[in-house]
Image (cartoon, rainbow over all chains, first blue to last red; front, side, top):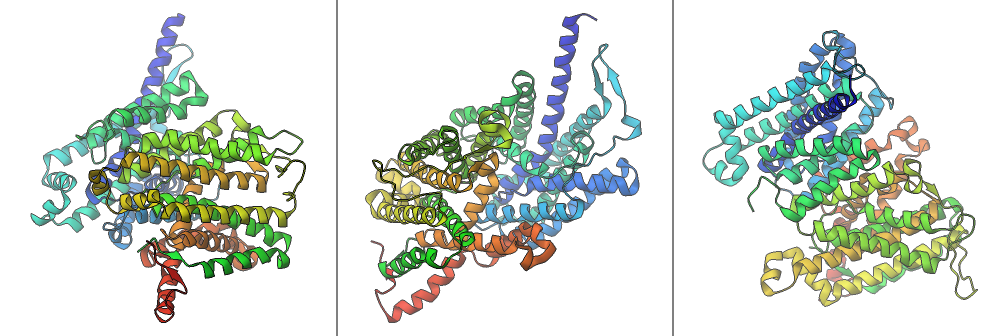
Length: 293
Length: 335
């Protein structure tokens, strides 16, 4: 195998990783951006839901012995948690100043992190890749690509497609879009806003948790895993523009690419690369790439 | 609403009590007291943005931590640094960083501002965490505290807990005085105008961007003062000092005490650190002490849902009743 081909394959692998990471970010940031757009709530605890999903997958996979059961179960449990949190706590925050939303969700992060510490301890836990997908596709003599990562990419793409369908082709999606562009107008035209809020919030939580669950075999589960990814999701939302699903998709892929390429070129500075992209966007289009001024 | 200034009497009484504390406090309580005074300076600096200008910054720990790192990096290894050189350098670096980041973030508002301040703070965190500058994620030690040296005369020995406490108290009093003057100046009134109605201020002809940026830089510099003192006190700086938890905690202090009141920020720092100390002491909560963040998180949720104006708000109600009967004794009208 000649060197040039090996190098190309190396970049192919990085590109696949970038797309996989980017799509995972999209699962998180699409919920985050919709919750901003429709309810006007800034939710710092969104990263905690990612962590909750990952730990649910770890725990359920251990109890049931199968990740195939753990994935849908964690999605359902997270949806229920989302509904519960929306009705008990978040519904009280919609009319409040952003400052209080920040503080309350910061308090929730502390609670989730400590509950995690009490229930699961502070160790890093691995989650096994299912037998069916536990092999790699050989690309060159030395390089190969794990199939599970391709599976994650495929699932994320399917979900993104499903979301597109729901938002653009169904009546519920029409109401979501209406609420996103003008909350009061949608409410006065008879849209049941409290129900819509609960649905969107719980779906956002479920998506974030599912992202955590499906990424668990790749990243393993560890304390503080939600906080890092939350801030990256903020960067995605700022770049894409608040409330914009399309912007979130473009920005997720761009951030995934910047992060992965940054790691290849200068590992120490890769985290900074992502923020530099954000700084440039802020100067160029402070309202985000997909929003009109 | 905010912007109520305490009259001199309660302030002087509080200052006297704080100044007398080293006569009774043991070393442990003096160190705890100094920590509270330092965090009070930090909370005051954030209140200038959150309570007085209406800018909710969730990345304020960046400037606090940056100044701490500046002290750690420019201190000589085995001898004391000169406070007169290192303090302005640390505060200056924090203010310049706030000016540069502010030039980008002040362009945004509302939710964007919150997210972007957080993201830039996290960028600075990444610089110190991922690279080898100042020991990377392991942090860096300051083996000898800086010394206060006026032409050979050393009025305070900062290695002594009581004298360090006095330095912190002196600087807190100075920052408190400085901010209360600043807020009563035309500049401060313009900031209040921006908080209440930014559009109107712009249409009157105020350069709103410049005012907000100036406030952001001043707040950054003052946060740097607190960070410098914190680095002095602990003799150790690692990336956690500028992590976003720190930004969240200082925001909590501002709300807890009641934002938009200078004494509220001080009160908030006092109550928060005291509660943290109680929750994390095994003698009080037993095995659950190591999970003190659970109690703190629950407290934050309760405060936000039930007492949005913080302790300062509750005290205001009590004091206002008192001052109806005794006009002028407690409150001074903000002009």
